[in-house]
Length: 417
Image (cartoon, rainbow, N blue to C red; front, side, top):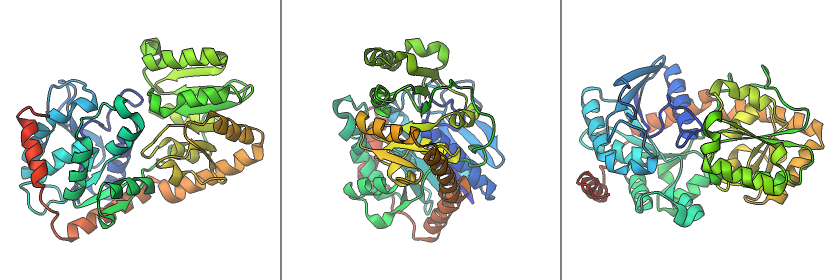
C-alpha cells in the first residue's frame, strides 16, 4: 500500500524531550518504519520548521519524510499552528494529486483538519484519525491553563464524524470519544508500540549511585507529575529520583519548570536525592532504564504513555498513575502497580513495597518484558494498523468533509481562527 502519515507538529526526525517533542514523534517514527518493513511505501508529512530542510528526506528504508511549507519555516508551539492548517491541507492536496496514496492516517487533531482538506477532492481516499490527545481531557485537567484553541473540542468532534475510522490508542480514549458522540463502530483500538529489539533487559547499564534508583522519563511540564514524585520521595528513605527529559543539561537552569521543581525539592528536604539529567539521547535510554530499580510514571493525566512500555521492555517494574493508557499497559500486581493520580502517599507506599521485595521486582520485570513482546512490539502494532487500513479501503467511501468543517477551514484561511 501507499500510506501517508500526517503529523503536523511531531516529526519523526525531531529531538525528543523538549517542548512538543514526545510520544507522538516516537509513535509516528515507529509506525512508519514498521509499516515499511511489512512492504508498504510510507510518506510522513510534517510541517517545515527550518528553512534549511529539504522538501523530502529519507528516514528509513521505504519511509520518506515530506516537509510541508505551511506558515513561517521556524519552530512554533503546536497551539499556534491552527491558522496554518488550511495552507498545510492545500499543500497535501497538491502532493496527493500527483502521488495519490491508498490511505491517509492523520496524527493529532490539526493533522486531521489538514488531511480532510487535502483529501476533499480525491473521491474514495479514506482518512483515518489518531488523536493522541483529546481537547476534552486537556480542558478537564488544565482548566483555564489550557492553551488550546477555544473550539478545539468542537473541531475534534467534527473530525471524528468525518473520517472513515478513528484509531484510539487505549480503552480509556474510547470512552472519551463516545462521550463526544462518536459511534463505537467508527472506533478501533490499536495501542502505541515499543521497539523490543532496542529496549531490552540485556546490554549496557548507565552508571548509578549505590542507593536505590527511581527513574522518571518525560517532558518538563507540570502535568507529568514530577511534583507528586518529589513529595513521595520524602517518604522513600535513601532512594534517589532521576528525571530524564526537558532541555539539554546546559539549559536546565533557564527552564521555569526546573526552577519550580528544584525549589520544591529544597522545601521537602530531598534536593540531594533529586537528579536532573535534562534531555537524554534516544540511543542512551535503554541503558538508563536498565539502571533503575523502579520506573515511575506519575502524570496527572496521560493519553497513552510510552514510557511504561519502554520500561517493561527493559524488564523494569513500573509504578504508574491510574490514568489513560496506563490502565491498559500496566498489569496491576504482575508488571507493576497503579496509584490514584496526584496521591504522593500512595505512590510512596507502592515504591516502598517494591524496594523491599527484590524478588518481586525481578519477577514483575520479567513479566513486563513478556507483556511488551506479546502485545506492544511494533510488528504487532503495524499489523493491526494495516488491518484497519485494509478495512477502510475495502469499505464504502468515507463521508465527505462536513459543511461545518468546510466553513471553519474557509474562515481560518481568511484569518479567522
